[in-house]
Amino acid sequence: MAELIAEEKINQIRQSVDIVDVISEYVQLKKQGRNYFGLCPFHGEGTPSFSVSPDKQIFHCFGCGAGGNVFSFLMEKDGLTFQEAALKLADKANIDLQIQTNLPAKTIPKDFQLMLDAHDLLRKFYHHLLINTKDGQHALEYLLSRGFTTESIEKFQIGYALSSWDYTVKFLTKKGFTLELLEKSGLIAKRERDGAALDRFRNRIMFPIFDRNGNTIAFSGRSLGGEDPKYLNSPETAIFNKSKILYNYHLARSHIRKHQQAVLFEGFADVIAADRSGVVNGVATMGTSLTEEHVEMIRRNSQSVTICYDADHAGIEAAFRAGNMLANAGINVSIGIMPDGLDPDDYIKQFGADKFLNDVIGASVTFMSFKLLYFRRGKNLQHEGERLHYIEEVIKEISKLSKAVERDHYLRQISNEFSLSLDALLQQSQIYSGANQEKKGTPKKEQRPPMLIKKQIDQLKPAYHNAERHLIAHMLKSSQVTYRVQDLLQGNTFNIDEHQAIFTYLLGFYEEGNQPDPSLFLNFIHDNRLHRVVTEIEMMLVNEELTEKELSDYIKQVLNYQKMLKIKEKVVEEKEAERQKDFSKAAAIAMEIIQLRKSL
Image 1 (cartoon, rainbow, N blue to C red):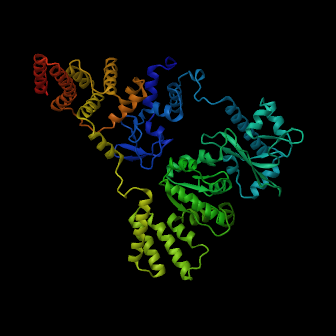
Image 2 (cartoon, rainbow, N blue to C red; image 1 turned 60 degrees about the vertical axis):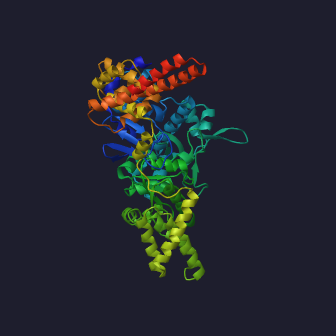
Image 3 (cartoon, rainbow, N blue to C red; image 1 turned 90 degrees about the vertical axis):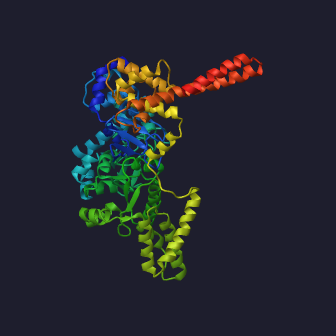
């Protein structure tokens, strides 16, 4: 279906979108020199090796080798076809291709889409009931009395479910949704004694749950009276998985990236309350502990997180676990500490938005400072044994810190508080540091940038391999160099099959009248394996100008390798002739070998 989109439209799309802007929606990028670097979205890593070049409009991962242009990024990341990626980018660039109806921008199972449609319709209905009807008036007054504002109600699309047993059932079935689908969606339940279909949510304030794209996928209903449970949540379904959802992520993501900071809460009520205080970068788990999927979602957008959990025992324990998970993922963690027994929602009601913003979020402590308080809980530090146990625990934690300045800071803090020798604390910390390294199984050493690691690997390649790559790097910049290389090879080919294929594509690319353009050239190639090689070569550092001597040397390395292979073949032939006592043939072969060696 490539003929559906004209080549000039593809080029218009490519020139209208910036690859950095597109990839930034998936990966947190930081500028280093002329390029941007971040954590690769195609494989797990702790050190950024994913590079994006705004000049060349390409990306390349020095870790896993993934590479391409803006089209291939969306194809790999979102599982799209080329045409689907083009349509998505055209929409972003406001380019009317006039073919959207012929090709869906996203393919999902029909049942999934129907579930999303049912949830979306019900969200709008619940919201309408709360805002515009007498039936929802008491629920609206309750929310306003609890400190909710009309702006918050609108922003988070809060609604109200009628007290009827089957109003939702009738409403959605009239809209064409089957009872089977609604049950799978978690929107209705079946009564055990007779199998009758009933509304899952009745006489509750409804908080819709959204996925990362803003689709309604579930609800949480809060009781208006004293009935249990206080919060009734949708069951997990094909579209709702609590371990992969962060509440408010779809609205907070842009703010998290802008501020390079996320605020993590325990529940959605805290997110909504904090939002009224000006904390627009807040997210929350959905009644579960933090998962690896949650950590990954946060890490893709920010390297700093403030945890603001309840100040009770369970909240402190959860903050400690979540902090360790985030810190182990390389995220900078701080903790917003509140008075005992209060959650963020209660704190804001009691002390006000400004005090929460300044005295909790603004005054958050480092994760290590939180650990000092965490290990102190329940201990009588006047008791010698408990005091020594506490000191041992915190030194173990301090020894895990990667920065020497931080280790020194906290060790001095312990030294001053307990009148202990700093040298003794340092010595004990070094013992624990050594034990930590042994557990990891690798000696502690300074990390180097991925570019340097890659360069060292390249230097181990044979001379002809590096020569061919340098030639391709210059050919990607100049059609003249490409035709010059073709002449100098005199009908010979590159030794690496991928390099020869790229060379052949380049000749065709330039013969069609195209100017040097790495991103456009990648569209010309229909082989993902070659995309990776091209982007890797494009990221190489080469001289701006290719001198005649440099060109000659590269060509010589390419041709010499072929001659060396020929020499090896001739040596085998010579030995075979000698074995068969055909000395005249052996002598002739020996002369050929001498001539080939001279030509080297």
